[in-house]
Structure formats: structure tokens, C-alpha cells
Image 1: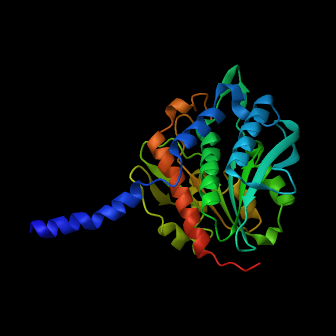
Image 2: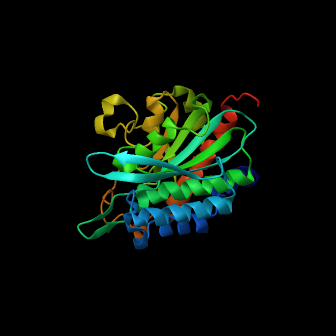
Length: 302
């Protein structure tokens, strides 16, 4: 009986060990989100000094990681004009890791937030410094572990002003639009007391469901599938972040995020409220998915 019990325990050790291992530098991940959500960034509203400071930080990290720029620059400038604000020069930040295929996966997260309101800084730690931190972690992983498909890493501006950055990117994409076969979008990954990260989009693109189902739960984070059916009303996330611009163009997407919490779009969305263990493993789940889907999706050779 003891021998059987021992063998059963040993059989579980490899799985447990693999589940514990993070495909990212947790210290760097937390440093990235904390600095992007610092008061000095003034809430990262598009077109402001705080936005420019955030851009400089992200550009520095792109260079450290070794992402390649398109046509010698990571910057894509565009104009925003809507009822709330006019921004003469908003800026997407875009770099890539070449793959062996002529097909492209765009990994995205918006870096803008809502700025300062009534004298209070809305730091937007979860929304969406967390997505940018995870994007940087994913870029660092795939720089060391080259993908099959070319991966474009896009930090979008203007999401809070109507998904403007994603629209500008797709209006003037750095590659032919037909080459983009998937968008993996991240928006709010760091605050959830139940350890739940949602993957939304497979209702519209059921061909992606098998890849999602291959992503194993981690000790402090589990992946749930949903929030993408029209009958769910406001709980349908299809239109609620930058992935919608891809969906409008019939480009498949998977959107990773947590459910709303009391700090959403409040001045209390600060670094102190981040769940560090959950956040690290939520970011790891996204990397796990990109690893799987990169292998699962068909590709054509260059």
C-alpha cells in the first residue's frame, strides 16, 4: 500500500513542478506595472505629458528586450478627434519578433488611461498597465524562444477614447492585413481575488477553443472561457476593448481579462491593490496560450 501511495505521489511531481514554473521574470513584471502606474505618469491620458513618459518607458523596454521596429521606428502616430477630446498626435508603439511563417499574430494591450479628473490621478494599474506589463513579459519570453509565426507586439494608445489606436493600426498596418491571423488582446489582468482569468472570443471563433482548452490551470490562476455571447448583454465583452477592431475586420481574436472590480475606472486603481501572485500567473497563462496557438495555427512558408 505504501509503495502504491509513493508511486502516486511521484507521478504528480512533474506536473506540479511544471505548473509552478513561470515563463517570465516576476520581479520585472511587477516593476513594469508599478512604474507605468506611478503618479508621475499622470494617468497616461492620450496626448499628455504623462502619456509621453509612459511611451518612453515602453520604448526603453522594447529596446532592452530586442524587439525589431518596422521601418526603423516603433512609433505609429495618428490623430484622435471625438466628443471628449482631440489629440493631434497620439502614438501606438509597435515592435515584432520574426517567425518562420509569413502569417502574423498580433499581441496587444493599450497603455493609455483616463488621466487626472477633479484633481485626482487615475493611475489605471489594472486598466491597463497590467496588460502592458504582460505584453512585455510575453515579448521577452518569445525573444528567447522564437515563435513559428511572426509576433507583433502592439501597445495601443487611445483605447479609452474609442479604441482609436487599434483602429489606426489596422487602417495602416505594418504588414498586409491578410497576413494577420489572430489578435491576442490583454486588458485588466492583475486584480481578482478568486484567481480567475477569462478568455473571451471562442464563441465567435470556435476553431480557437481547442487551443484554449490545452492551457492548464496554474496554482494561483485558472483560465475560464466566456463573456462573448450576445445574449449576455453588458457581460458580453466582444466590443469592450481593442480586439473589437480586429473582430470588425473578421480577424479572429482572444481577449484575456478579469471581471470588473471596485477599482475599475476609479482613482483607487493603484499598484497597492494588485494581486502579485495572481497577476504573474495570469500573465503566464497568456504566454501559455500564445505558445499553444502558435503551434496549432497553420502557417505558410516564406
